[in-house]
Length: 364
Image (cartoon, rainbow, N blue to C red):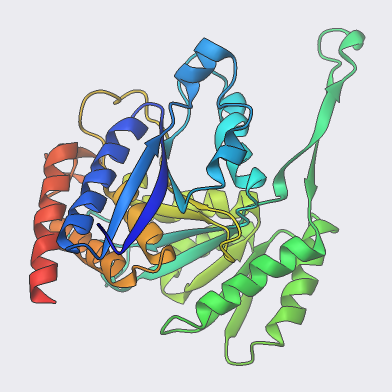
């Protein structure tokens, strides 16, 4: 019997989510087997997603969020599939869990893996490594608004969508970014807003950022408007370390960062309850990709990298580092899936990662 058993809720979701989650679980099981009883994983699978919606009229069980509370972590595939509107699938499952469990910090590392063709003009792309910290509980994803005036006839309807920024929510994500920066070799936080145009919520963000920064005199800071920041990602990525932004802005910038690094398929993320008051959820940045679902060619690196984030959050830092090193060794050997210029399929690249994982263990 293992010294410690972690209970993991597994939600494969839709499309390639089912395929990449399967590979991530293989990596976790390999680590558990190699631990020789130090730890083990116990999985419960939940069939929630678009197929579930088409059959039952809901994306998850009505008490689904409460069911998640007893787990140590949630491992999530992807959500979305033709026949179910994207806003229904997103709000009905992923956002329902994130907001219901108050997973208020979303982290998305941007890493330039060896051997992966990068889409950036930089003399040393593999030296680049930054992390986006996304406010994950409010902002533009608050769901406040409505539609009205249908009675005016065609072309007369009005839709209102409001963003919610609270001082509490803003301060806790900014402090999280500063605390994270203190753990890195370069201690720097960049704040991203659009306060010239959004003079209430974003100005509040700027004011809180300035106030919190005074408590971290050892951390370098700068601030950018989001449009200028998008250009900065491309032109001066070496300036980036920890980038903190609102729910929407960080979402968009993380996709840009992942694309520059080679593919959304290699991007990992974590929806965190930093104080462990609720389970955190780990998922790759990419979507369900229905166009390639079932073909066995999906890139599992983002999902396996998300498993590494989960291991770290569970206190298994050494194992997390080994997974990340095994991924880098695999891509460095030229074992790549099609989205990053290779020929390996989903299972083959996972096999290579597991093989390299054992080598990392031996060399350690």
